[in-house]
Amino acid sequence: MSSRDRLLPPLGDDPERTYRLGIMGGTFDPIHYGHLVTAEQAREALDLDLVLFMPAGSPAFKQDKHVSDPEDRYATAANAAFYASRFEIDRPGVTYTVDTLGELRSRYPDNVELYFITGADAIMDILAWHDAERLASLATLIAATRPGYDIETAKARIAASGIDFDVRYIEIPALAISSSNIRELVRDGKSARYLTSESVMGYIQKNDLYVTGE
Ligand code: NAP
Image (cartoon, rainbow, N blue to C red; front, side, top):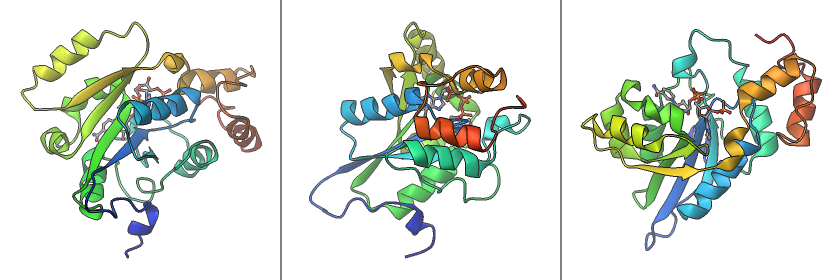
């Protein structure tokens, strides 16, 4: 077993059945209840065997923005979520989802199907992601939307790409919560309690995250 394998939980040991692995991709700066509800509802709706929270090490589309240290984002995810993985934060360089899915594909047996879950706004831009065509062949995409989200526009944009993406949309009312709102509240000295777990709030306060509003 390689050191990368140790970063992943085992799945797929019974060759007689198919397993479904959910991968919650995000920056998680910080993780909040909207993410947790998304993972739980995706797990139930798609009958996933396991959902891995996968904080991006160096998010591809945030190279010019301040993002909290990956260790802090991993620590808060590990505090809150059922299974948080260091798989992306331990890979040096820019985090491309296609690399993650390709690695997962080679590390899990063929009876494990991959489901990549993230926000619908991120998926709307998928054509600009690194090697989108290969990505489409590796996983089903689950796009989490807020109520009132314009799914038809998103669908049309993805359909026009000519790439055969399999995208499922799930509406998550709890996604009214956002990481950027939590960061703003903390920066302004206001309460963000109950938007995320007590342990995540405790970590944010203890480590002075978001106070400068960078
Ligand atoms: P983002 O732009 O920060 O997020 C877009 C929207 O989706 C935000 O409203 C965000 O809310 C929400 N969101 C993000 N992750 C979510 C999740 N797991 N469940 C529900 N809502 C979520 O997106 P990002 O964090 O940069 O990227 C999202 C994922 O796509 C990451 O895994 C990233 O690596 C991947 N991605 C890959 C590429 C590439 O390979 N080139 C490019 C872009 C993104 P919050 O801010 O509240 O989370």
